[in-house]
Image (cartoon, rainbow, N blue to C red; front, side, top):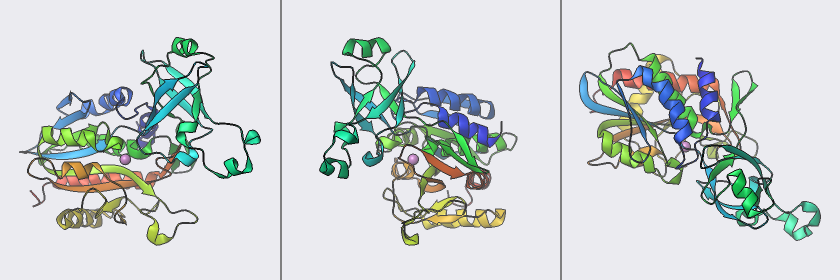
Length: 350
Ligand code: CO
């Protein structure tokens, strides 16, 4: 399978935070052939392990969850009120199509609606509509009809745009944060399948990152690594109206190395190693400007007695909005860098 097709399958899979079953099964199918064991912990993290010469563990992390919403009320006309699961830009979610997963696994299509502009006052039109004034129309005309469609309080849904190629080497999908990271881990496992690994390597696909690094917290305890690398789809902001010094990453300049974000100051030892591996491999890279966003590395590095942790990211535009985009060359170069990291671990670091 080509990396772009893996990205497509992962991006299109459903996996709102706390409801990751579908995407987890996609990941399991792709990673299982390349590892010695696969386990799913009580909270839903998928942990795939390759034994290495050194029993101590290297933890690779990507989160499989995506931002979404949860049904909080169905009114007697069948309209759904909702709350966010993860951080959305409220100003831009209205007017989009959503996919809801019912309790028995069916998919329902709905539309996030709000009062038509024609009937709003000039004042109301000038302001963004708050999320608690929006609703989802699933086509039901009563609470009972909504229930017959399978729509109930507690059901997860998200804005769904199918994966597509925008231009050559430039793709769009709904959940590239962090399905890009999941795809990097799977490709890394695949490319190293016939290589004897220096360290036991745990490929960890975490639940609930968007709710506060939840999966990484428990997975890191379980794996007990001495070294870790989180792989993210991060904030690409090279776009009109944003000054260069405020663009956390730029597309097409290679994978981004984090030096510090809001959840961690990365040990310079880890950053220097990643720079060296990139230089040796002829892999372009950039720095993710400090200190935007949080990553699973924030949770992992504070696990137990502390874990030396780094972050490599694929720059993605428009994350935490209804769509996201990335350049395949950044994605490919992230795979090459993470692969080099695994091959060289622990490289004097642990
Ligand atoms: Co993310």
